[in-house]
Length: 297
Image (cartoon, rainbow, N blue to C red):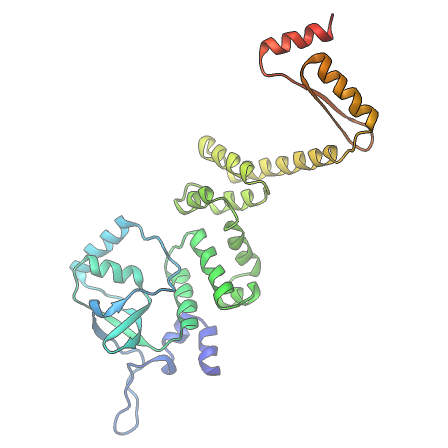
């Protein structure tokens, strides 16, 4: 068991070439083993999709192009499966190739047959996709989240599994806290990972969406978004300082009198040093004219 875990820790390549995980190898009468990694031809109908597949979106046009290539040249790179019953197999890796083969109308496809438990299935599918497919940032974040939630791993352990820095894993996980509209924008390549990381720095979802829409409409660079995020934080700090001020009872009474006299909404924001603003709200140019007449007789 420990040897198998060690092979998994080395990555997908080490595991796929390990005799311990290969059930296509057969012992001869002399006790020798055949070459590890032999390929079997399996019926497409016998193979089911990998429920642990982290990739959830496959571009239709790219699949069609691959299907056309497979129709002409055949499936050159075998998929990898595990046997789950009599003449029944489950994909471990190669779902894009498998889907394209179905589109191409293939009856059988070449496959490596392996032994893998559910934990190994999820780990192998994740590593294979990160190494061989261009997952979008949200798919990577979701895959990392599944490793943490379903396999009870820490961020540090996930970083070791996928050979990434812990900070990188954390950055992908933070993207999952963004509003759904922004997450979809990431998946559709409307904004980059750099834009998304800057948006994560804003706590308020409405402000995140507002800046996201500005990025789309104004084609803002990552640097511009980072600058806007810093300004947003500065204004939030200033607002919080002024809003924490508790007004004395006599000042509250004065504001109420001013509200009645001006027939308008009046409020005061002040910091601990006594500096602040007196705000008088109006909803139209007519209201502003009336206010000015009352303030300037």
